[in-house]
Length: 205
Image 1: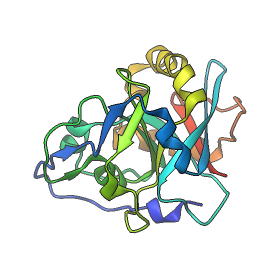
Image 2: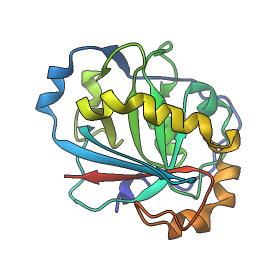
Image 3: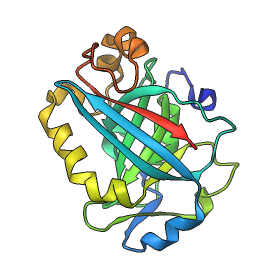
Image 4: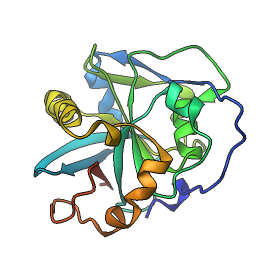
């Protein structure tokens, strides 16, 4: 289990501005140096997405996975959030708009709010290049980048987001809390429990 990502804390209401520590790139070959991971996403009505990712920071000492709600996350959501989620979630973060250097990076902010991991993506380029300072074991945010099969099928995953109810697309701790029990009972690839969310499962190969 990715227990290093479980933080259940409350925050002061002061805004926390965040930047994305990555930039869009078409240099897919640069991903070859990173170990493989796997993202599995599933939702109702029945839909499924599987793809190889690249683990850039850091690789946990486990091959197990944890399921979480797969939701959009950005600077504005991190700034407005005051409470961490008690329900596991995975941050889906665009690197197309990196923002300005600020209080902290958006991945750390997701970590503080209870995320179990993050997948960066780009719609303008093939993938994302994580800033070098974040590619080290001391940076405790489990971050994935799309490998070619995820890159090729990204429109399918983005379309799935557009088809689910809008309240389940973006990070919101209160909404996540309403589906905590259902998400905890979900099994990757099975559709007997409808949480409203796209659910994600991260595997570290």
